[in-house]
Length: 291
Image (tube, rainbow, N blue to C red; front, top):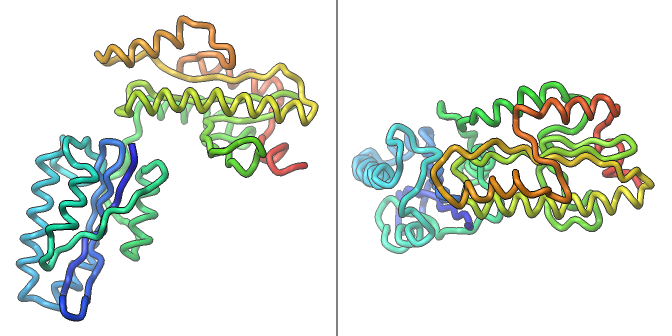
């Protein structure tokens, strides 16, 4: 599913096209990211106090619409979306011709998270994003951080994105939760089946993991490494009631996956022990940029 963004603009003078970028809305992966600049709102109020009440009314109308389409009405970041989509943003762009307008929706060709939303907000609104709300860290992620990241910190690459430019045959970036080398390759990828991610995205992650493994194995041969690699997919049992998710999880658990081992978060210590026992080091320092 593609992601789209639109900039909220205050039109102080339509004749001179004088505008102030007030905020940013992003619709991505069934979530809406939305934030307004309080500094820009204060500036708009100072520029034209008489028009501010109308601006405030228009903004509140938009907020109310977002509230109706989201699960949690207390904040305006990281919501499950019902009907907010690209067409919705286009309607705002086409029909909001008053003092509050929306820029033409543009496509974002990358995964959107709190950090990327912060980057876009800084780029388009011109200031840092300071909000009390933080991206919720799942229990699964907390376990990964505690049992994988912490014990392997400064030993191998953790929470690491392998860039396509680092391997000649790789044509996309890929995130590893652990990646190391010492005679053989040691890699771990964690996927949370109990997050709110779409099943297609989970399938793509698994497929991409298999593809990257094949390319890493080709690289290992070219570097004269052993073939005794350890690739692990870390997944916990699915706890929901969606049959398709449960079927995929069961396939992974029951079938002998040819390219990687399946581990639960409770079994991660096995991967950690292997990495430490084999004295593995950071892939990024040993191979990725060395010819």
